[in-house]
Length: 415
Image 1 (tube, rainbow, N blue to C red):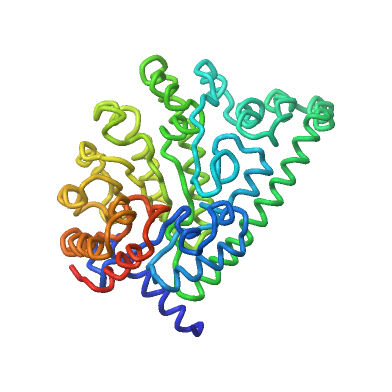
Image 2: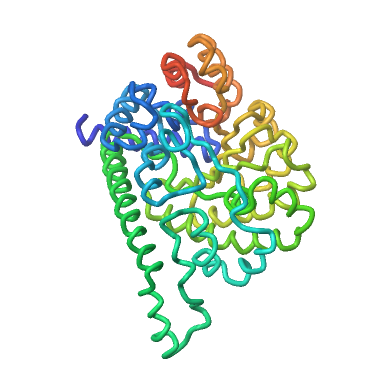
């Protein structure tokens, strides 16, 4: 494809997506590509190969994008090809293909307590110090030894000079050496991903997002306290949990803005793991989850970015509450909530993304996928504000023919 053709295609796709975001009727409904390990199935390799062979994953992803012609896509390397970096880091919060799970079995999140309930005060006093001395050594073997570092905020003048001797401690030296190796591997991964993104941009394909951020509540539920701990905290440590959420939100927001500003995409992906109806009541959602997420959404919008929360599970009871954001400034990616009902409540507020069922893509037929997509396009797509996709991207076990049917439907039907 000539460079000029790629630039034209890129511009057309970006306009199509942004028209949908801004609740204008695009020339057709845009369709997005997001997958974890489906590319391995598509390319005939194991999940483990997809995680460890950067070049092979790029080759397969390029072929898939050229065939499916999405209007935007998620960079697969940063979702999938992280095996070498995680292995070098000795990462403990996930198991992955060939490292805790079988060669063709996806990630397994390790639900543990990585911060004790009585450690909220330590986190609130000095989040960075808590990270260095306590949290990081618990989640990655390469960080072990950092607990020997001094308490930097208590050092000054010549005391800082003398305390620098602790960088010579054997435990710290080992940690720094391991982290250098992990950093080198992560750099190779990112450089490979950047080259792929540049090539795809030249061919006319924009990225779906330029940064990822957790909801502040999920930040603690997923990565610090675990499911049991966070449930207890909501009852036993309510005030400290809310204070920690407020503190963490500052760092989450700043990091997301900094990362996204450096990207060609101005969309910030926010996967939501604990917002669904089945976990907490609407009253608890309004107290623990929504205020900090709403502030994150507003802060990203104020920074000129487009927040894109992924509402996992069924969030029907939340629809009226989450409508309280500026109109035409965000994307709500919907997994299981009925998209037609979501359109009724949110249609004048936010662009919706989704939500072809995972079960249909894995066990259904191309005709069934086509009919479902047509219904979404002709109802939810009316008046703009729809990006066609699966509930949470393309399931790993999806039939390629069904995936093709979804992408083709976006070009066959109009609202």
